[in-house]
Image (cartoon, rainbow, N blue to C red; front, side, top):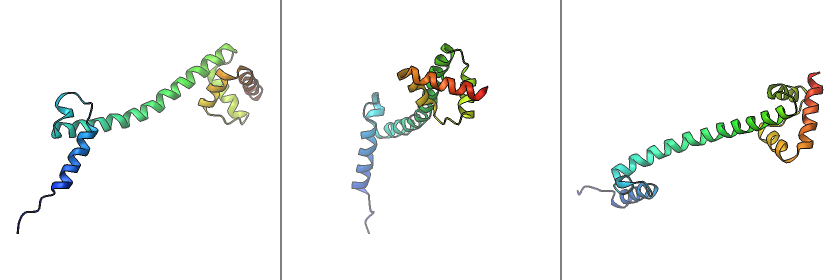
Length: 118
């Protein structure tokens, strides 16, 4: 009985890897063995990058909020604590958007936080 080879399936798998490796420099974009390693490494970096993006955006929002609070004579930590005590449940992304787009609304939030702390 002849040996069965997975010709079409193997070719399809290799084409899939080489397609994902397009744009890689040198042999990593053309040779299957190197392309396979490059694709796996790229997937790892992509996963790490997705986690880092969330972290860096939160840092940006906190920085913006801190600056907006400082302009109004309140520390960031006091502001967040005051909002929690006032039961105002807004995340930092929305708070930073309010601080930029609607300064009057942000002033109202600052006042609510101050009254909750007092």
